[in-house]
Length: 530
Image (tube, rainbow, N blue to C red; front, side, top):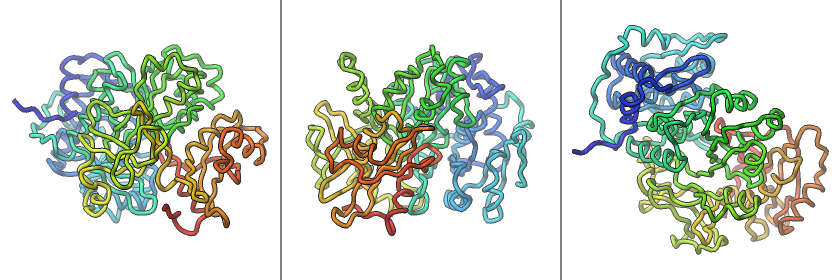
């Protein structure tokens, strides 16, 4: 009577019970669950005929389109593993990932094929499948995606493959900063249980309309590629993050749920159109990545009417391990207090396992909101390891616990709150300074759009905080004004000792701030953390 835990079973269920329900909307195209199921089945058959079998790896470099969704299901149904690629990576990083992952085939979007053109001669791919895009051309030799499917009959049955819930479902590569990207091995089981967390804790229902703001290549859209199908809800694809277009989609498509990094929230609330946009659907929005400032969460709720849900995780944990559970008791608190609570990473989700904050000696920190330690986790959603890299796997997973590298406190109610990454903690004259705490104050300034706080060398104190800020257009704020503003809310030693105003901050394709690039401008080599 055993049935393996695999998110693939949710597609079967959705097709069975919601055949005429709109499953996917992609610009001017839409597909029912029956049509979506048929397309994924035809993709499985076409892949098998092209030589892809159980255990093989297929790399996919596509934006958030229906083709990307089809690949998640069509590849996995064969018992093959999908390797989602970040299409914003440099050619050399993509070459490393494709070669290291042992991918036999590549499915690529024509618009983003430029880097592949540079490296294709160095790759051992058996075939390239190209998704054609109007207005774009590629020199790559390959078969068109639609032509790849067209010879397969619409009602053809996909091959029956026995799935082991512990086998590899996706191989997700982390973005390398100081070393090569690492391939995170995620199983059918870990994907299934993470998506169950997504469904339960984000309240996904059959009537939800989900906007894929978050890149699907990033930790499998945090599980959204599976969870929305599980509920028979509707996927709305978004080729690129375009704030005015997103604001229009809220009303045009009745969007009720979306996910995104704090930088996406920032883009939305600072979009001029936001001040004149009325969103009647009150969408729920989950955010994670860099710890969001309480002021940013409050602005998103007040200006756009978004119901913010804070979650936390890593690619290595499928990704969710914490969420900020909202209690009725919080409603009586002030708006500032509510926003501060929502900025916490929160408590364990129902299906992921155990998470806690520990001292270096392994003892759990006191639940006092003060003692600082590292977040560690174990359980159902932790990766099987890094692909072909036992050394880094052993460094990350010790005594059965995955070490996140994130420094946090635990509040008396058990809610965990990140104070910094270990590498971002500023130690000035022996005092610990949380860069995220300083950033939280900066985000309250009416003229600050984005802020990053890093350490810079100091002859007396070793290192001190520096703020790098993007201001509202036309704003005229001085360095002294910013420092004085921070000193009004922080101990003076925590306030920035220097301020730099810039046009933009470096980020990854998923919206995470790349502080290491800012630090490199001030330190000779990587900053050492004691």
